Length: 73
Image (cartoon, rainbow, N blue to C red; front, side, top):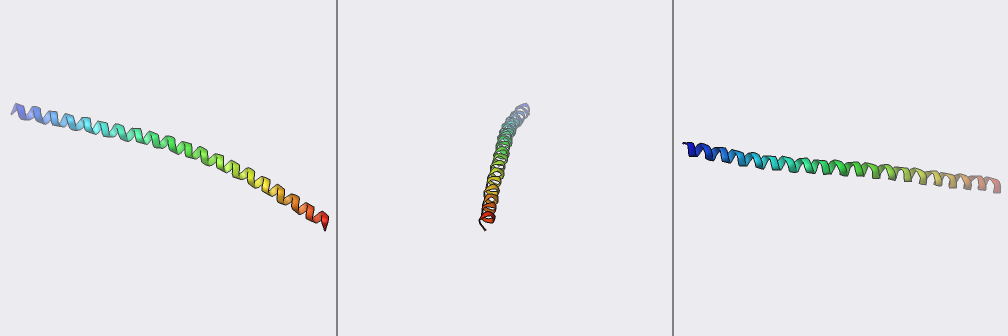
């Protein structure tokens, strides 16, 4: 009877350790994903800024062309 109890406790202990490892791995992956998300957000912000600058330059070029065309007309 005692042997069965000891074996059951050992089995439960092993299961708990296994669950702890799984939880630890999930936590680690979660933190990695949070980091990746933050990096992607930064990249998105940088790309938005580049797009805004490109649009501003394009608008300046178009505006300059319109002014040039109106002078030539």
